[in-house]
Image (cartoon, rainbow, N blue to C red):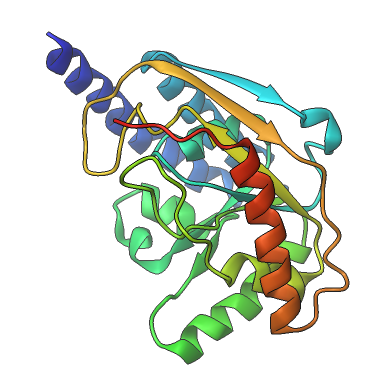
Length: 238
């Protein structure tokens, strides 16, 4: 019975993705502010959380301006981390790998919309992507990056990668550490079994990145942010 319910939930999430992606694409020439575009993503993910019976509590949101210009750096344990963050920050932008742009409808909404595509291929291409991303980040809104680069498979935090912190240094935009607890058991990597639960998000105060100029500065910032998130993160098992 549980698998039947899980299949219904997955069908709902996947099925509603298409019309909301089409709406998001259609909104682009009509509303250049992006409000309609972000509304589509936020509404779709809100319904996905409701149908999958995932509750979200947030601590520390008063430390930031929900519409402010930030780089949000978080741990990553579940596919549901993105819907959760999209419902906390109204105009959040996702940095996504180029391969996701080939997914029908959803991929086109990502590529043509207000999100930021990164080519992680050759070193020179990746570097150009970071430069373009830095310009995009400075244009406003919040940009979400998962510092581990991928989802954990065992509930333990992975080592952080330097990309998010190099971007922070190049853009000069304040960085906000965000800790997501409780999402690993909902949908572990490699699993399709959605388990209803509560996700607890902790938002920390923004960190000024204006002084981040060198590789050593980036590594120091990375260690600082990892220490903050690790101190708030609660390891889980499947």
